Image (tube, rainbow, N blue to C red; front, side):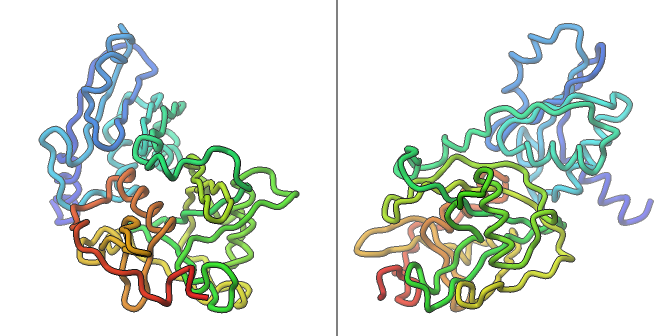
Amino acid sequence: MTDAQDRWEARLAEHTVYRRPGGGPAVVLLNGCGLASVAWDAVVEALPGRAVIAVDRPGRCGTVNDGLPDLRQEARILSRIIGDDAPAIVVAHSMSSFQAEALARLHPQAVSGIVLADPAVDAVLPPRWRAGGRGRPSAVLLLLSDAPDPSLVFTERSGGLRDHAGQISFPGGRAECGDAGAVATALRETTEEIGLAADEVHVLGTMPAVDLSATGFDVVPVVGWWHPDAVLAPGDPREVAGVHAWPVSALADPARRVSARHAGRTTGPAWQFGELFVWGLTALLTDLLLRLGGWERPWDAGRVIEVPERFRSDRH
């Protein structure tokens, strides 16, 4: 057996699989972050006579948590777990919808249908950030590269802008009359800001709107994937000074993580990348994505750093 095969068999062994034989099509149950397959017990009991496969991903129920598989590996693993029970109905809860989507996209022969249960983003989004529907509609795109170690795309706003000059943000902006919803807004703004065409983005879904009462906007985060062969570059330099793509592994690195302090209070999570500082809504959504995606590592929230003057919204 080759080294690559050894690593593959070890990766497969990191998953714990509950399999109950029965009639088809089989139902594959994927639990969300922080849960285990036992959370599906009531669902399993409600499917008498049906073949059921419940999977505990690495880090749950005695499985190891050393170097979690990326989505491509996860999709391949799930396809192999389903095996002769394909095509199966995949039921995914919370952020396991990412794995379900990757499975259906990369191994369509394994899937006959997908059911996405409540993404449960509200459970981890602080109440003060939840939009009440009174703000002006806007959207941002949380854009992940389709790679073994996905990179998340950020923009560096131009220093000459009136609002949030020089800050690190996600591509996005306010809705326009011709936009057919939040996804259309996010994709249009992304094309304008970093040159990535809408048809080059594979949209996975949206998170609940976030309230930016200070600016009067309700922001809908849209999550999507792009192929890293596409070239990203600032569109209008009057709006975007630079484009940054930081790997999830770097974002999860505890050494880069701090809590931000501004105007005498701690505002929430933040990141340091050299001279660049990520805080505010951008940092909150990054933190949320890491937590729901299962990428977060323990970090010291007690390490507090004052927001550098360059990145303060009140510096003008």
